[in-house]
Image (cartoon, rainbow, N blue to C red; front, side):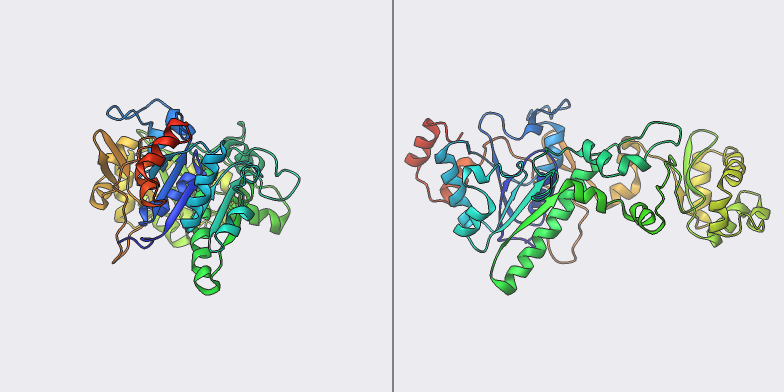
Length: 394
């Protein structure tokens, strides 16, 4: 059994941030009931190609929806709203990422559902939160990377600001949401009461700036864009090799001394300009070209093997096919089969006793509507047929 077996999650979210959180709950054994629009479902079902050939489900949807039950309910209609309220009475958690006040207009806001179920943990994910002058604005990952500072420190110094290659704000927000919900469930064991959680992508992006935003708060200075270099550690960046590129991630002075000895230039570690990390950061512009000349003399594979033998952090920049063939990936079972023609990424959570249910495929739209309404709400076949005839469910 998973650590969250027995918990019921009513998932009203779509796209990525909310579904990323609810997928974590599903991996941990919770019953996740994903509410989707009849006929269309989650927006990401259509975000492709690529699509899984056997099922027609988009790769994007597969990334964040394994292990869930899909229930298609039209919540724009009063009968659909009534079904959501009844499901919320049976749920431990409601997760939603509608615009501020969107569900409250339908009688499905936090005050409405917490009145029906005082033990409910209700988690709202919005672009800018439930308060402040921006609360009515829509929120998108790309926008948050810009407004929240990530793009100001990402990219080459002479180039334009760059976003990350993955929607990291959505993913980080999903992780924060799962942590916050589980903390609220733990607190409920003491108080007996649920509560409303207010999570904003904007807040998360600023929090995730970590050492960069801390450096600004301490110094008052904007950290520069350094491409693949590190603002506080040298050498800690990408270097060209004879046949490609290599990441060199020197974390302390001892590692630097070992590296320059390996590279045939031990005198660099004795040079007062390079002997300590603060000195190397100060003299970065002098040191880096010297290291580039040394690293360009050997292949990436040669360097990777030599660095590992000397206990120096470094390695290649893998494409996905390289990752797929990596023996560490294979030994850890990081890729697994979820169904015909569908492979997915395993949950990184490993427990000594508890199981992780990360091998269940994502659902087809509305696949579990009948089963959930019958088992959770005890609706008869006649009642379900009437709802279907009235286009409340599909």
